[in-house]
Image 1 (tube, protein in one colour):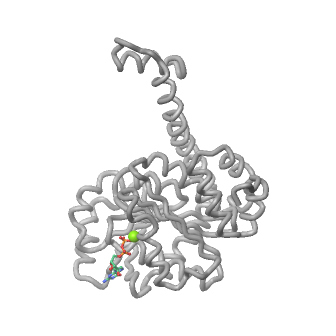
Image 2: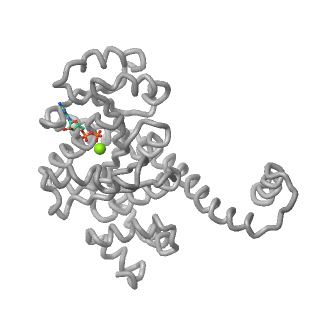
Image 3: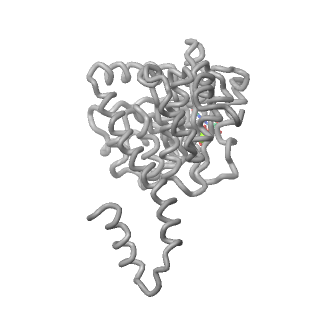
Length: 303
Ligand SMILES: Nc1nc2c(ncn2[C@@H]2O[C@H](COP(=O)(O)OP(=O)(O)O)[C@@H](O)[C@H]2O)c(=O)[nH]1
Ligand SMILES: [Mg+2]
């Protein structure tokens, strides 16, 4: 497999071969030149047709369970689905967060459920860049819907989730502190708010507490993901939102915006690598680092 030419790899992933999908994503993550040429060879029509959905929210709110339910409904409709789980906190849980649940739900042998975990090892910017590529690779492999689960409610997790076409925020009763910490600004980039664990006491109070942060146009949905209650409705809403965004040309705008953001992320990633090498190769004795940085940057991007 390692000796495979980019064109062959692209051909195999276009046929839906899961190993080629995994390999292509790894090559992009490793910032290899092969990765870059793979990205240029992807079937544009499939990229256009796919829908990406970012699912974010505090740990324990039920994102993975909800993702599992969505996979179930999508597979019932014979729709091929991709799942990307981004875990910013710990490389140790690599693959475990979502993988366990997927296995539990018997999708492990299903060739039309493509799963990928991405651990950040403290470099969220890098994952941000690679996550977009992973979404496109899955789309090119025939995934009609790609779900991206991010753990956490910080700005960086939101950045990743909002690379997707549609962003869903999952909350649950009992997460009052997280919600207080998160409120400012985050609801603005969310398309759909899901109050999960609607079977638990406090769901109504949560809705009430959120009230002030919500706009009249905000879509709020209550689910009980563990019982797959309300989750088919969530899928219906996602697909009708997609339809609306396409009709109003808004999907195109969102994608353009995401591509720009990814370009910034990639530039920073590649820049950092080259810059570090350059600085270490220089004999800059006695210059204040702040001044040295300014001089160096002026050579690349005059301010
Ligand atoms: N009561 C109840 N529990 C749920 C529901 N959805 C998920 N859970 C449970 O909540 C816990 C955390 O769910 P998980 O999907 O791993 O959350 P994540 O960290 O956001 O991905 C698990 O024990 C789930 O079984 C729900 O709708 N109702
Ligand atoms: Mg999870």
